[in-house]
Image 1: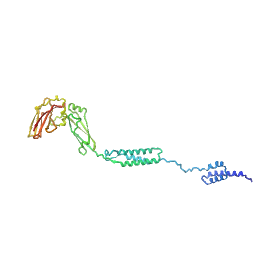
Image 2: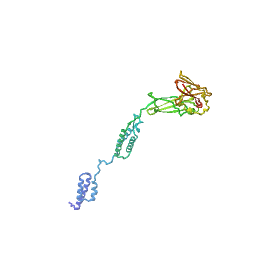
Image 3: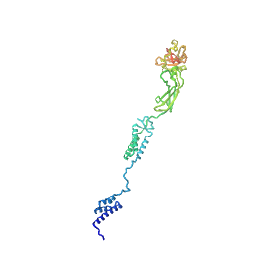
Length: 368
């Protein structure tokens, strides 16, 4: 039987400490390794040996079921739906200052309201495209956009533009041009689809003339071709219609007794060019023949050599403006429906259609 010395006992205790530490690896998280560690420390195990075999093995191993703390990406699906809803709310909505230019069937908002929604959509789209945007940023952009969409919808109003009536037709009467302001404008009759007359304030009229038209009139008083007027509805009227018409001059008037007004012949009265070459009428040759029973008065004058057309002016002595008739070569003209006591003034001039000029007036006064 061998006897162990004191040194052998100490070695034995140290060995037990190492074995306890190794055993603790097999029982991770249990009470045994803690007790073994405490016993070893109490029995004076070598710190170097304990560090090598005990401390290192006592550390807990990571739990394989535990999820690392990593931040999830922001959910942008609700924001994208809000953007789509805002864009849909804008469709078909017009912008206007007061809605007076928008039809009643349409909706409108002011430019400021539209801009507010556009800005909110742009801001939301920027967040939706941003990499690394936080959930707080996404939620704030969504809330701002939804508010702007609600404000936009609340601001929508129906237009107040008057309903329009279509223009159905236009007719233009021929016009006599006497050298005044260009262009000569015919009397227009414009009607809507209901057969009612369209006022002049309900349309604009534009005219088309054949090439050289004005030049021809100024040169020889003749017109070749057709003129055209186009009316376009405005305000409460819509649509475009056109009509053709003919412009003539006094020189083209062939029918005896064709009546003209002071306004029509005003320009002729001022045209003196070539007047000296126009045969001059002689006032001494003028006479009037009154027939009270028939209530007529005939003005006669002798033919003037070289004259092919005459203008006869007439008016009451109290009237300010003259009226005229064209005799187309005849040397007399009979006025009807005369009243007893009428004091009339007559005047005659030779008219040269090729020069668009007249002679000096011959004048005579008489009482019926």
